[in-house]
Length: 147
Image 1 (spheres, one colour):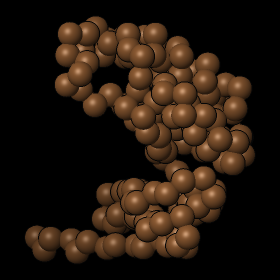
Image 2: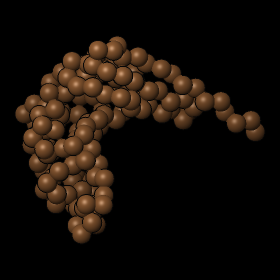
Image 3: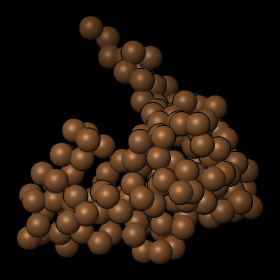
């Protein structure tokens, strides 16, 4: 994604002889989040990184594709062995709540960070204990240190 793939090429060269000791994370553009485009974007990333699997594949923000389709595309990549895990970044809380509902029908998740906003000094988490439990949004505030 960064440098239109140039960053992945650099990372691929850097981890060439130590891939088994690296947890590899990369991102896909939001406009690649469809059932058709996500696998193609993943294959390009795998080629640039010089590996056959991505440990964590992130969607970098919400795009025009319905989240249900994106979840299906990520799950298909996971089932095929091209990625081990997937996630999202730069989603707002409404998008994450919607995603949590989609995930309830697909697979069990434990917890992931939703958003960190330094200006508000807060962290948001979406936690799901099991596929039968309801998603819950918890806002965890941190107190600012007194000057």
